[in-house]
Amino acid sequence: MKELCGTLGLKQMVSHTEAGGVYTCGEWPGAAQVLLALALVQNRTGSGWLVVVGSVREQEEMASELEAWGENPLLVPEVHRGGEGVRADPDLEAEWLGALGRLVGESKPRLVIVTEGVLKAKQPDPRAVKKGLRRIVSGEALDPLKFVEELVEVGYRKVGTVTERGEVARRGGIVDLFPTQSDVPVRMEWGGDRVESIRQIDIHEQVG
Image 1 (cartoon, one colour):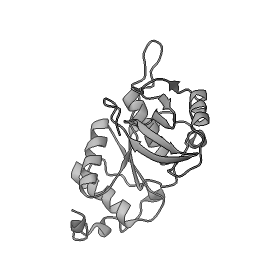
Image 2 (cartoon, helix red, strand yellow):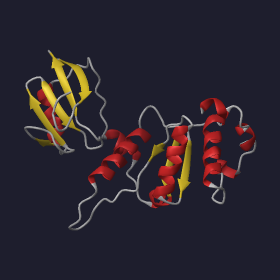
Image 3 (cartoon, one colour):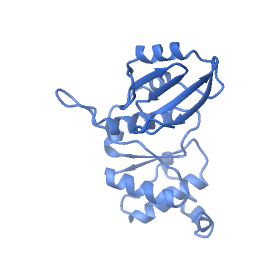
């Protein structure tokens, strides 16, 4: 599919720039909108592109088609944050937090797709999101006991076995962690005072 991009004359689709770098194609067929998004992200320089669609269904369909063309768009979901007597949807909340984390990360996404609802909703300060992120890599010097204590201080629950987001379990030099913005837990193993490995684990079998 990627090879076809060079035969479609996509550069001609973006030969002119709309005022403020904004393109409007709401009246176009869905497939044509996908091609325009593809043309913009592949033939325009800049920090990235924000695509606004009308519904969650349109958001998911556009993302699926762009992935077929070799792009990896970031979806920021509409998230129900709950209210009095109603819990927030944990899956959507985790997806939302993960998307915000990617937006403020070092490697910026080239293409972000949001709905009008996401665009209108109040989002947290990017500085606050960035402050809440912590990157840990294999080989890093880190005290596992202190690490778990820090997680508990920011709201993680210390348990015997992790089964839900926001939980952490420690057994000697092994720490199982289920990040609040992840679909799966991870296991961190220490060799001496350094993180030796980080890998995903099966939530049901608790093996990596």
